[in-house]
Length: 341
Image (cartoon, rainbow, N blue to C red; front, side, top):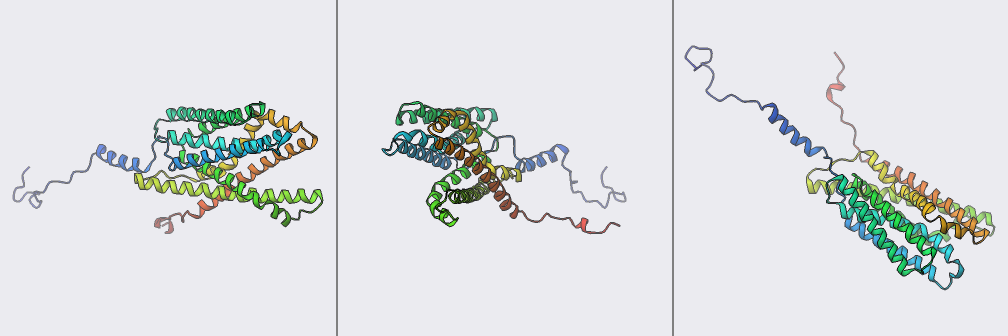
């Protein structure tokens, strides 16, 4: 109907009426906003994977070289088996972390979860084969060398499978935390003797055992603290890196920080499981040398388990505390503050 004088529509202007967006258009806009804020089902991208891979490869090479030098030293003599059993945990942990970091680097750009997992396992297998070949070529050809090579290869494959998880940022945080803890333990070895004297190590065997226990607990406490801080810093940095690159980053809730902080301890305990399965023959051979060696191997195994538990709990607690301090107060609506009518 046209706007005739005197009609009810005469006062209305001839401007076009505002058309409300249809349900499909509104849904499209909302879906776009939702897709920008909600993470998709694609596996995550782990920033800094190249640096982590290079660090872990260098650390594995250092562990293999130091173990070889200790075994082939002129002072070793018949204690080569004991030295091999003593050095085995460091080699296995390094192989585990290297398998994970190299697999992260190789699969970082893959989007499909199944393809990513298969590629990660294959990469871990490749790292394990290279490690085993390097050990067999540089170490003496005997049963001890074969045990170290086979166990290290198995650890690298397990590490590669771990890198196939969807939460790639958490895996990256765990590997960095483990590397941090392991490097600290090596550096801390220079402070063991002064700390033993500080904790009352005397001439009696009991005083030396008590002091060694407190030194070990101090080492585990500090290693867990550094591991938790390293995991938190990596997760925070990776989120900011994703925001700069993509404009949005999927937020990680507190369970992710909990797992990342506890990850170094979990890997140490996993290392112990791998050693007691794959390296059982070497440990039994070292323990059978003498009664003192048997006691030493038992004490070392118990100490490694205790160290893993301490690093696990201290690292998880440290990460959660630091993460919790970054959370602001929960916003409260004004309507909730008004009394009900």
